[in-house]
Structure formats: structure tokens, C-alpha cells
Image (cartoon, rainbow, N blue to C red):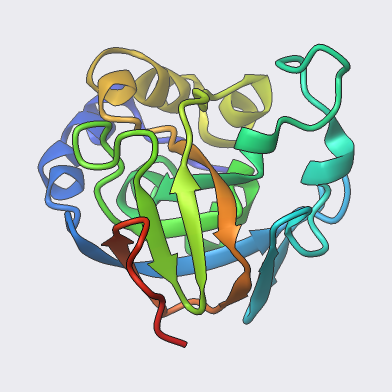
Length: 192
């Protein structure tokens, strides 16, 4: 039986979450979604301008946020804070993959720290934070509990982007867990 943390459990983790690195963090996990309700934790991933994470189904899933129902170009990648995910998964790292996010990072994802347009270098790739909101859904509540859904979607969780953010690839490249994730300016070269 899965253990879902209570609202009180989650509130007790706020200080730890708030201590997430601001300018330079770590890519903790890369998760590919090859099909509905399937997840693959990768030792190495390729980020591509056209398809996002190679082998992920983002580009064929479509979106209600586009007029023609095609995949939203500003929602190629879902990025979530590792400390939040650790809290809502009751410390069970095996459950991280089910959040639905491709990139799990130890980095402050708040809008104040990473406004839309902020670029992040990781591995040999660069991604850009977009203005598309990222929210939890019924599957998220099933996997982590109703208290977790409320924690990430309301109040301080919503203001601090606890559910994560959307991003798009701006420089293709290879990424691996353990890669440093660092804020860069648009004209700053990426070290290979």
C-alpha cells in the first residue's frame, strides 16, 4: 500500500524545499514517457529542438492549449523540483518517475528565480522556461494523494511553482543525471 503524506507532513518540509539552490543546481533524474502510463528512468537523454526529450511522447500527445490540438511548443518539457517530489512521494525515489515530469532538478523553480525566458544549461543542452502553467491533475492525486495535489496547486505551492514548470529546448544536446543545471544568459556560450 502506498503511503501518501498528510498536509502536515508536507508543511513540515517547506523550509527544506525553500533551501533549493538558486543559481546552480543538479539534474537528479531524467524520465521518458514512451507511452501512456509508462515511464523510463534514463542514464542519458537527448534533448531535441523538434521533439523535446527523444523517445518521449510529448510531440504526439497534443494539447488543449493549441487551436488545432497539436502539441504545445512551449510545453516540450516538464521540470519539477526534486525536494518537492521527495516530500510528496514520502521519500520514495522509485515513485518520482510517476509525477509525469521529464526533468527532476534540485533548483529553485519559483517565478521570482526563474521567470519565463530564463535559460538553463544542463549537460550540453539549453532549455528555456516558458509562461505555460504546469498543474497537477487527477492522476497526480491518485499517485501522491489529495493532500499532495493541494500542496502543489494551491497557496504557497502554487505561488512557488511546487508542481513545476514548462520549458522548451533552445540548444539540443545530451543530458545525464548528475549534470549541473545553471542559469545562463541568451548570448552566453554553452560548454560542451
